[in-house]
Structures are given as C-alpha cells and as structure tokens.
Length: 535
Image 1: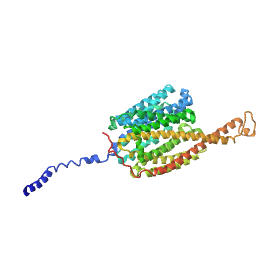
Image 2 (image 1 turned 30 degrees about the vertical axis):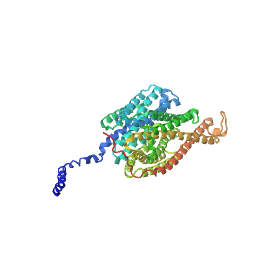
Image 3 (image 1 turned 90 degrees about the horizontal axis):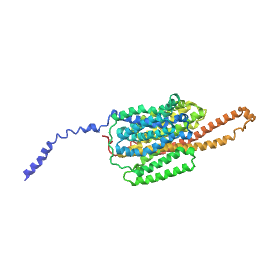
Image 4 (image 1 turned 120 degrees about the vertical axis):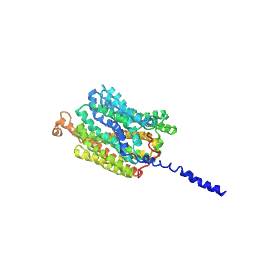
C-alpha cells in the first residue's frame, strides 16, 4: 500500500511541471499598472480646460459691456441688468441636473452637447436685435455655460491619474480663478475699441475648435445607464436656487425688506428643506446630500464657499471703485487687474503639485493667511491710492488665492468615491455659484448701509449754500458748482470708506477660515471606488 502512496505523492509534481510555463505571460499586466504618461492625459485635460475656461470667462466679460448695451438698446438700468441676471438664474437651474446627465448619458456626450449650446447661444447673442432677444439668447447660452464647469470637473477626475490629480486640478483652476479676472481686461478692450458684440462672437471660433478637439481627443466614459431622473428633487432644488438667486440679484434694487424679496427667500428656504427630505428618502437622488457626511468634503466645501465669496467681491468692488472713484476707463481698469490674474495663473499649477506632495492642509492654511493679509491691505483703498499700490495689494491677495484654492477643491473631490464624482462635482459647483452670489449680495447690503451712515455724518460738515447765496464758504468753493464738486468728492470718499470696511470684514472671515484649513487631511487623500471608469 505504500507503493501506491508513493505514486500518488509523485504525480502532483508532474502535474505542476506541465503548466509551469503558463505564468510566463504574467509580466503583461505591468504596463497596465504603470501610471499613464503625461502626454496621454495632459492633451485631453487641456481640451476640457479650454471649454470650461471659455464658459467661466463669459460670466465676467459681459459685465463691462452692460453700459454700452444699455445705450445701444435704449433700455433702463433695471431692465439691462437682466442680461446678467437671466444668465445667473439659468445656470443655477442647469447645474443641479449636470451630475445626473453625466451619469446617465456619459460625460463626453454631455460635454459636447454643452459646447454646442454655448456656441449657438453666443452666436445668437451677437446678432441680437433687441434687449428681449438678447436676454432670451443668454438663457440658451447659460444652459451650455452651466453644464461645462460641472462636467469638466468630473472629467478631470476620470482623465488624470490619482498621483497627478493635484497638478490636473491646478490646470483646471485656471478657469475658475483666472478667467473671471481676465474678463474685465478683454471685455474692456473689445467694448472700448471694437464692438460689444465681439464679446459673444469671439466664443464661436474658439468653441468650434474646442468641439472638434473634444470629438477627436476625449475618451469615451462609461455611463451609469438606467438611472431614473429624480423629478421631485430636480423641481425642488431648481425652485429653491431660482428663488434665492433672484432675491440675491434683485435685492438691492427691490429692497432687501420688500415683500417680493422676503417672499423669495421664504420660498427658497422651504423648497430647499423639501429637497433635503426628498433626497434622503429616494433610492437614486438628484444630488446626494449624504456626501456631506464626509467631513473632509464638507469642510473643503465650506472653505470653497468662503473663498469664492471673497474672490468675486474683489472682482466686483475693486474695478467699480477704480472706475467710479478714480475715473479710470474700462480697459485701463482691466490692465490694473491683469497682473494679479497672472499671479494666480502662475500659482495654480504650483499649488497643484504641492497638493500631490504634501496634501491640502498646509498649502490651504498658508494661502488663506496670505489672502487675509492681502485683503486687509485693500482696506487702505481711497481716491488717492496709486495704481502701483492697487496692483501690489491685489497681487498679494491673488498669491494666497492661487495657493489655497486648488488644494481645497482637490481635497474635497479626492475623498469622494469615483462613482459619485459627477454628483459631487455638481454639488461643488452649486456651492461655488451660490456662495459667490450670496457673498456679493450680503456685502452689497453692508456697503449700502455703511455708505448711508458715513455720508449722513459727513453731510453735516458740508456748507449749506442755497441758490443765489453769497456766503464766504460758497464763494470760496466757486458758488453752487463748487459745492456740487465738494459733495461729489465727499460721495467718492464715503464710497471708498465703505468698500474699505467690506475688505476688513472679508479679511477677518478669511483669517477665521484658516482654522478650518488646519482640519483638512494632511497628505494626498485617497479616493475609493476603483480606477477611473473610462473605456
């Protein structure tokens, strides 16, 4: 019996020896495990960034053309503001559904569709024959413009390798921060020296080239397929954002305590509460609010909101003061702001690489400190401030913004599972746009209040000169004309002092945000969910 046992013990080696050569093909998976070369993902990433850059640029380039459009169509100030308001409201309605569209039909397909809508809307805006037609075409343009940033962010996380995601988001951030800063310069030149319609026409050839490049270069991303549209969630979030954005956009002209504005705030809050309840109860939510259970995502989203509010407040009030307080033209104002935009552009890729090496905590904390310091310096703004001082203060502020923005934004998305990136991108974009509008509205309310208080105090010091008066003070100031000039000068100084108070407030909030930045993860966050699902 021992002999058979010996035979049995010898057979296994023979059976193992036969298949021994089979493991030879094992080395073949090695190339798949190796990280993609820079060229393999940098080219499609560049295509995505160009399309997103164009859409974000349009949010600020149109602002400088509003006075010229008003003159062209003979519209009132309230009516012409709807060129901007309609665009903002439409983007607020479109962004929430971007995540579902990307998951359902594929990111590449929705990106191309968004480009087509943006190109077509831009061309129609350029040929608009009246204010109403321009507003209608701006809504069409906003559909594409709202989808592009959200879809682009989700595509960045599908294209770039995880170990280079910081660098990739640094390039993506050029559109988020650099495009709004470049808008006044480019728009000011086109409006002042060419034609305001060119701010829309310029999107057409660039958009067509971007569309062709997208069709050739972008990979095909797997879609979720079979996902139902959360109709109730879509209706409630759109109603909420529409009401809130409309109230924030028109609050200064309608009055913050008017029944219309208070009613819109009430409707927006109620619809938002219903939306949260609905999203927590459905199987396939429109926007998964459960993402806020991830503390790193919630913390980063709060920091993004603070940065975006301060960023757009600076983009709005600094050019406004330079033009109204110092009498500078639109193009020259854009040139003053251009150096700070270039500083941000230079810092974005650097901050992305820093995130790849050390994570989000320290770049974000140091960047926020620099931003707070630069914003504090801006509180010295007055009619006698030189251009060099404005450039230096804005550049310091932009240095901090460029250092902090991308690590914070990347840290928010890096902790999200890959399958939920599109939904998280939609949430992030909603926070960015809502916080920018909310911050600008709150600061405008504070500005108006400060102006009223400071002007009432200084008005008591102005000499009272009635028509025909020959008081010594009136004669010394050139009579009635001299008094009008004195009043105008007082208004400028009061406006400057109120803007300074806003920058002090913003600097304080930014400094407090440093504490939140210290709670960010140290070291690059690892995202779960497997490799990017691209075919």
